Length: 73
Image (cartoon, rainbow, N blue to C red; front, side):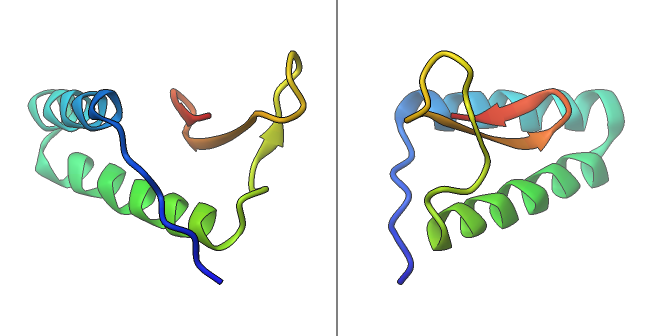
């Protein structure tokens, strides 16, 4: 069963900023690659809510790495 991922305004604002930065700094292909990876990870999370590692401070919160510098909690 696939779960629906709710994207907050803050999430959308941050993703837009990341994509804009990547496009300006590294080109459109880099931004597209990031978007593809993000979409894939969100799909994985939708299919398995316990994807990712438990956080140290709270075992009920998990983090899922998108890239080395970007994580979803």
